[in-house]
Length: 330
Image (cartoon, rainbow, N blue to C red; front, top):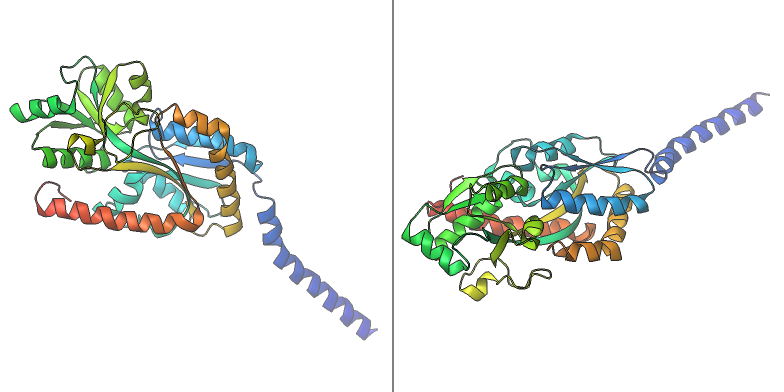
């Protein structure tokens, strides 16, 4: 009888052990079981917001659950991204990172707790050169005309950027350095939306941002593109001249990277990556993206972290050089 009881106890213990081992696998296999929150760390209405919403809507059809986008503006994207860094690493909170999330905030060391090691990068989905756009009713129809005016009357031509010290501010400073022009650079935090309002209200003559951010105003001829800081033509706005063809050796731009908290399980990350890759490859997205002036550019989980590290190294070096020359402050 004792031997039979011992066998029952051993079988019971084995069953408990098996259940403990199999439970995480089963829970992971059932992902997602509830809504997935996708944080866009910028205000609604900008290019990043539109792209992430479109891709997420398509990814939702693939992942087998509900996904919703939430805009959390502030801190040059740090507010929203920091929330994701602190979120439970279960795949139910992910973020859309941009240039400032990966470059500006770490370089400026704005927050001691803000470390990219707190995130697991899943995929890069776009690579967007910045551009200089101008109010079509202004007197400046070419880059040469604008630069000549900014040289003749320094700090009178108002150019809208987003955040002081951010990517488009850096682009404007580099353009000044390379051309000898001097703009009146005005900050409009919160993404491309406030920049658009500044031009529409005649507060600013132009803006530095991506052409995709200003697609609607380019399409209705409210603004014109003077140049794009790229070495290859824009697939949508091929009539906008590249800076290198105008004698300005400047290439700079943004990107969108999908990320999750660092300890998110690899199989969950793989499901998220697969859903976004299917969305990215879809005819609907590829057709849509070519109509908004954005360049789709995919890097998967296996490549995106090394690309991010190399991009940081290159841009940190460029910005440190500008600090040494007194052009940029840190």
